[in-house]
Image 1 (cartoon, rainbow, N blue to C red):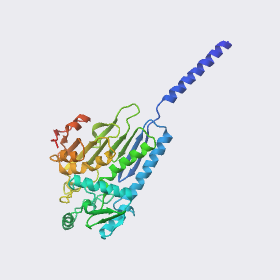
Image 2: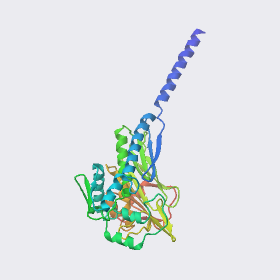
Image 3: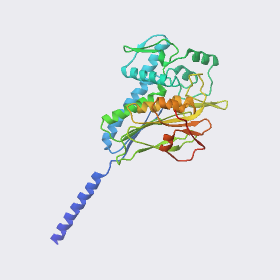
Image 4: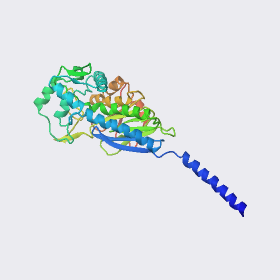
Length: 355
């Protein structure tokens, strides 16, 4: 009897050890946290890390995003961008922090690459159309004021960035970094998570997404591409370590007036807010600025339309492009076609011409 009890005890101990080993080898639960910055939803997902470690790293990244939100807000509060815009409107210079100076120099380069179709100097035009507000009233700007501002041709090229100061030779320049801030922040968050020892994460800032590592099992991340006229994804793309995907479209910040849709993607050539396309999406290969380019490049692609989309994509070193035109028809590059899995067949697909 004693021998039987001893055997049962030893067997139970072995089973307990086995169950303990299984529990120890089980992957930690995914950690996800959401926030709201830059007027959009942020979601960070971390895999393969203990909850406490993931939570601490994500908390630091979100705190940095909150600070950026305050600093870069174009019309609220007393952040750096509001202060700079007031000074530029008076014809004065203002203090310029080093990281913001670096961002604006990059934006100046990208403005030139896009032939001015991407330009954070157009804050005055964005405000005229009513998009410097939390809700958008369906009111068109005064035609004379719009024409005057377009003719003033505000450009980042008008800026002087030197000795920790910013100045402009054109008082019409008003900075609005909405076309680059999300992408810049993507790269910052990825770097912060990586420095904290996180090996597998996905960062989503308002539909601009970047991957850190693959999933713990080696699989790529699956990311949905929003349908511009439905509250669902129209396709899925897989992202490997360091790849980023970004979209600009007419379906979030917009209003309808006299049967026409007007969106925040202002055309600097004529100051119009006509939504000529529904959405532009790019997939960017791994690079230190992959997130930033995923944000910036969609603006000239959106405004240039199907005839010049490939040209501007190539100027930003991007091969994978998708454009949904004003009729809802899909135009894409061959390399993007190979990366997509459609969830529902689009009305019609066209291949974009070579750059």
